Image 1: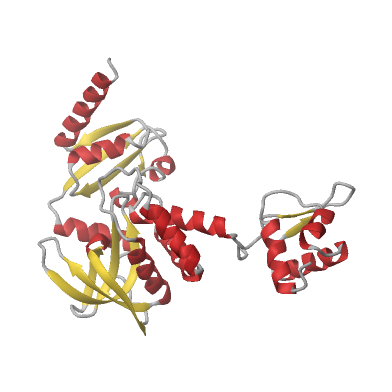
Image 2: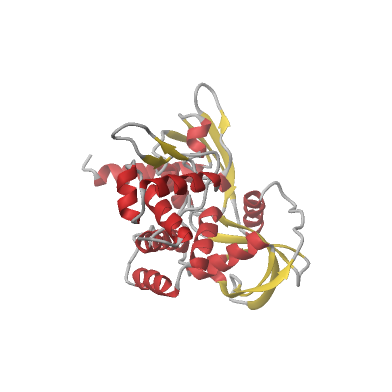
Length: 321
């Protein structure tokens, strides 16, 4: 019998977070208490904001339903390890769709993981070889979680940085946002030593250290961190402009293309067009367009048109056509 009320509430909450309906008698047996105590504990959970729904009758019971806000989750050891391993795998390889929110979730989870579970997560990841596209650098998840915590806490961040030409330096920054392009992670931050905004490739960062010094956020000289990163990359690289028409609504295309490539605009009929600029190789862009699974037509540049044509012919030959 669980006599510790807080511990019993956590155990009850863990049971209710399993997607099924729990008869009151079964909950009472699991917890070693009376049905009356179960009803009181259910009322306590409701007071804490957990939307517990009750059904009447011989087969009635309790279940947790979707509410207006996200209440705290209670995870057992196996669930916590599974989530941490999944988030680490995605974060470490800049998987498209695994954005800063996922890294913040990982930072919160690892902050409260007991050392025995943290060791299990590290062991599992070390023994696992992820199947990735190979077009982006791997990153230690610890680097991302430190950065995410300083972004969320508005805390100054110090780290070592290796530039593209191999030059190494130490940076003291006010981190603003982490941005994933689908191939790499970038940190958008205010560089205090250079008194200006900068973008940093996270795979070139080492020894990140949260200084504990708080700061008031500065105004970014762009509409968003993603837009600032796009402009920054264009300034550093030799870029080319492209225009691609899709035979699909703009919302569908936006959900399948990285935001930094450009925002789809409505075109003739039910289609849309994407106009942008990038320094990525044309063969990578051709493959990325094909990965949307949508019909498209390249309008410019000629190099991209030729690349898409060659890619299509190569795939046809590979299929025996």
